[in-house]
Image 1 (cartoon, rainbow, N blue to C red):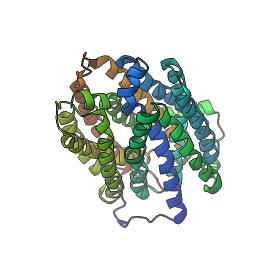
Image 2: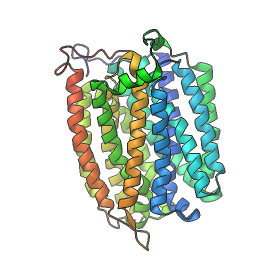
Image 3: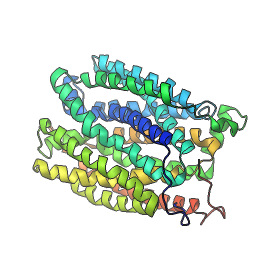
Length: 420
């Protein structure tokens, strides 16, 4: 929580600003690669003769492989310079993305998504471990606000461009674009990012397996893991079928989807940093509570929509996204205060794995719940919204306890040290 004796936000140094920019751009590439299949679903499913259940598996395969990689990496994530770890797995991520672009069948694409996920899962956890090493808790709301705008940037820049490329050259063209753009990000990391190895002086000399076991059994960390999993599982249920729902249920033409992503992405790009600042200024749990209320209201409206004009869908999408951002940004910043410095890499790797595995489970379950009619319309989509409401309420209770724990009001008599 924000220190009441020091309400003035801690400013960023010049190097910290560079790190935020690089990590935000890196997250942009990871998020775009993951999000890309959802809006392409309306084109990809008929092109490769994929059923809704198969499409759910295609989405979840990335998540499951990323989750498995994160668990495997957790034991040794704190034993290396985080910059080197980041570069190795980012290179593998780009190779997997290239394979996605080269895939010519459902099974080849499935294999390529598994490869991409294996590396992407560790890239995300390494990025967030770097954030917790270089930024104090009083700065992390703003950092997460900027980092999470990668979702907005994906919508504003990546998805419309990707959809345009797919309309012109085929569904696999956007993957080649990602590889070309992300090579520059990798070069910038090599050239300008400093080693991130201060944690090596604090890491006890113990085996990777022991380090993993101690991390997953820590009662403090288990609360953060549970909250992360619940926050992830609800959203992932909706994500794979959003484009199909917008086209076949709401009645918006596929050619108009870029406008939906563009407007909602622009709004998210503006409010993301503001939500981060509000989290640092007014309290991360307060902002999270507001986000939960907004999410519940908008998901009940969205998942029960019939045919509506484009402008109405855009308004609902923007407000729904506002609720999501008001949950993700403060919750990520708040739970980052749980791990000790020597455990941050392992904690973030496990957290990333839980996000991916929870999302994968959610996508598979959603694929079994949602039914596609002969016209392409989706039935039982509202059931997925009800599930999101339930997970949102439970996560609110968990974040309340974590907030009190970090403030020293339960558990230890003193707040947990969270400064970098």
